[in-house]
Amino acid sequence: MRASMQKLMRRLHGALFKLPLMIDCDEFEGFILAYLDGDLPARQRFVFETHLKVCRECRDYLAAYRASLELARASYRDASHRPPEEMPEDVVKAIVAARSEPGL
Image (cartoon, rainbow, N blue to C red; front, side, top):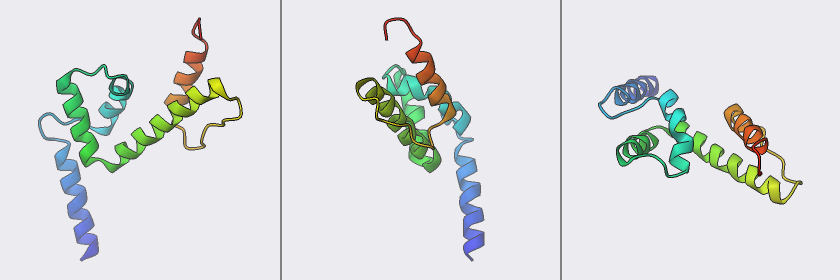
């Protein structure tokens, strides 16, 4: 019974991402910085937040992304902060790029 329920849940989860106004996880990733900066237009923000409501993995990813950005900000204030091991690679690249910008 449990295996059939898990299979049904996976199928429902996959079907949700095929609905109009839905994005998949790869598309979600492309909107993270604009979302956190408050730069998404209302429609895109709605789509982004709808995806968050149905996708635990992306909620976890966004939480890790936010924590990583906070650690990056804190590193400017305190050199003793170390990034978590689970920090997404694109966040590391963004931090390195931001540090190399003039005026930072």
